[in-house]
Image (cartoon, rainbow, N blue to C red; front, side, top):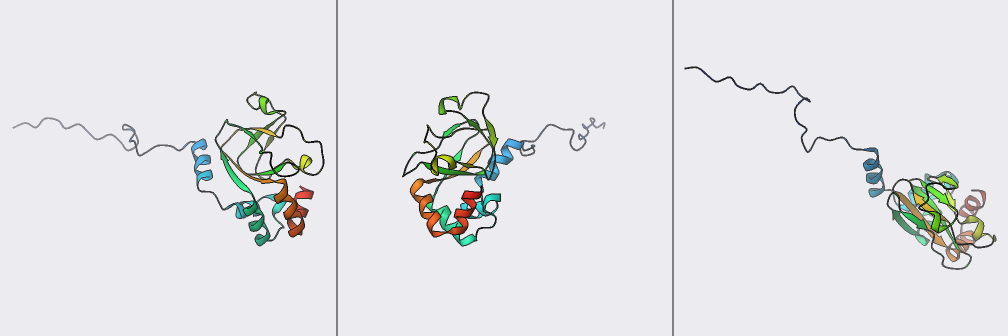
Length: 168
């Protein structure tokens, strides 16, 4: 009795791709990083402007703010509340700074901002308030925002935070 020839097994890695074996793209890694992020106070501690500030002060300062996640390519505008505008820091990701909110979809902007960059500082400390900063997220973005009243409170209560904001 003759046996029919059995098909040979393909060499490892040369067979059809299995659905559970795939390469994770750089963008997917960034999204995963944003999804399992550090608490805001710890994320602030890792940024250059706030590296020398006491951890407890940063925790309390972070609790005064509102954290916001932004998808890639989304247009972002800082909230305008409280007295004197608002302040935001990029905790994770990169964004394109634009002149006006209507230009946030334009391909060109003024500058690329990254983790540790502050937005709204000039308006907060006396410059003429305009339409506010407009951003276009180049990667998934994580922002922490404070209104002017919260920043004023932080300047009075925590000297280390005040120094970091004024020297940034």
